[in-house]
Image (cartoon, rainbow, N blue to C red; front, side):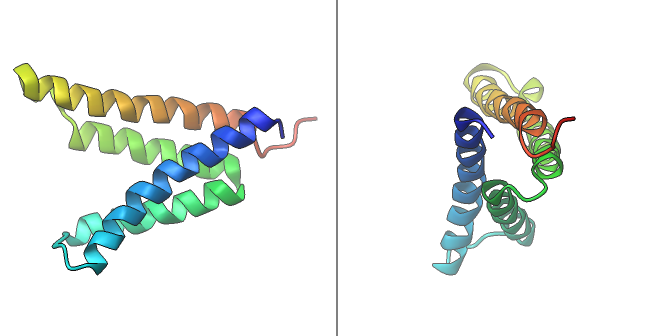
Amino acid sequence: MKLEVRLAQWLLAAAFLIAGGFRLWQALRGVPIGNDALLLSTVEVLIGVLLAAGWQLRAVALLAAALLLTDAVVSHPFWEFSGAAQWSRLQQFMKNMGLVGGLVLLSGAGGAKRR
């Protein structure tokens, strides 16, 4: 695998590991976090580990992309807001879309052997 693809793989993995790991760390320190957030955080850490390891890279990258796409629509509905609140939600939505794009590229660039 090319160096730039490997770097993208690890950076995308880090995004999941840090986001999920931080929320789990907060929960361990006593910060109240809902069960849904705990489950999502655990899944994020697992996805991060699998991406970093390169295990079933194509499938895991596409699964992660689907998760982020769903999160963007559910958690950042910018179309329901106006003004500064809309801008804030739109930024978060587009951050997720950028990560989805990277994951889709990773799914095509890494893992699968070409004939």
